[in-house]
Image (tube, rainbow, N blue to C red; front, side, top):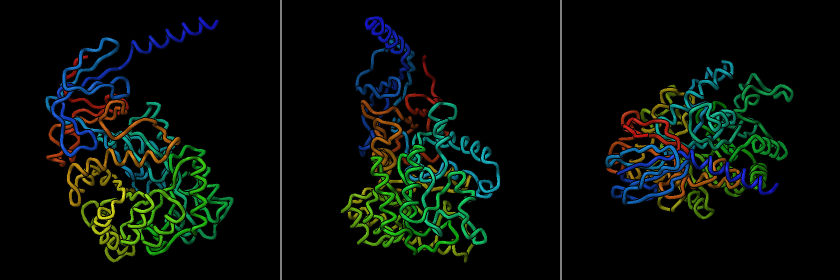
Length: 444
């Protein structure tokens, strides 16, 4: 019986190996995720979803499965891009539609936006809050085209915090009638350590790879001033302890020194935003090995168009004024930096995702920008430990890494703005070893 089972297992293995999907990129110059220059022309073999071989000499034809040959002609092969702060359900749909339309409609819109996201070259998204569990599952199973998703689930907020979407006339809270945003998984309002523990554990039960907690005031929210510190240290530590018991981490929304410093004392591993951090706070982040997931917020075409004179506009301008300083201080003290967009409720701005990456040359060289959006962001994702939904190495073009790859028409280090036009300049897009776009001729 054992022999029969072993033979059956071997037959299944050989059958699976016989139909391996193989892709060979020939004559490509590689940005590997860490180098400051492209390689000499190389050849790269992908078997199923793994980069199996990188060689200077041509790789012999593989006869063990279906092989796709792509002649790169000296174009740039690089890792798929990673957005470390995104909201896939809320990013590409107006807020009014989220609040008023059937949630099936909202999710269908999110599925279409996920495909656009991948076609811009973003093969991975760390979702910083929202009901993305179903979208992730549909993408992973192949029913929807889109990026890998590291979901946070519902953001966790105190009453009156950045994740409290209620209007004043909807108060006081009704425990048996949760708000729309809570019913559908956009946010959870939790006050006190017991409620925070429950909210954290519920997100983990649903499949969160990390936990997102609102630690301070925000710009887009109407009823929490920017300067307020949200949650007590004890409440924040409850979320950290619950996440740590699942071997993952907490990231927090915070701008001010007080909010950031309290979160660090509570044990968080990542801070989202942080534009108002002072030098003592940045130094504290470096000393505690805390990531700064900073977005390039400027008063430019990518800024949310709040009405002039409104409270939201005033908060926005104060954030914008701190962006340059935050980047400068982070570089000075060697804080680990991640890059993301944080687009919300704006279909037009969502299409400018690549431009929000390339404008990072205001502070960094093109090679540094690319490293941040590939290798470095991938290192942040690894903090989720065993809760990582995609075990393996992302963000690099190395043997043994997961095959998330872009073939770019040109030298992307010399001209980073090639990425601003992904339709024209991304000639091949591969995620998990599967080709989702190929405008070059290929031999099967």
